[in-house]
Image (cartoon, rainbow, N blue to C red; front, side, top):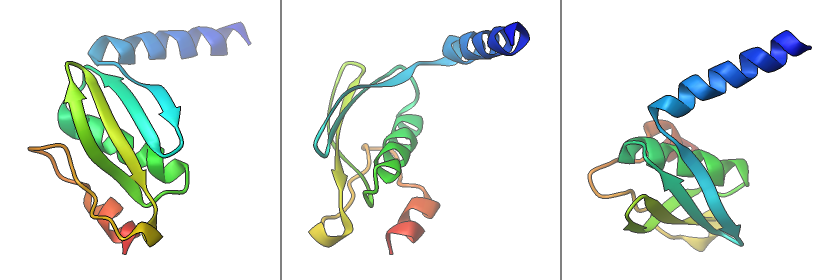
Length: 98
């Protein structure tokens, strides 16, 4: 058990050395994500997070420093998913949305 815990801790530290992405707030369909990762990685993370909560995907709202605001969109809302400027919504996310 100690070996598993140690490996989990070490791998977590190795990944956190690259960049950090976390959800700071989740209220209703709004998500506040803090990240030092590349914008495309943040967009992919937001899309996956929203899909895990049974939404169609994430629509970018705004960015302030390292904080990104997203709205999780349901399929029946007929809204267009808006990516972070300079990024794209992955092809698998678009295919899942249709």
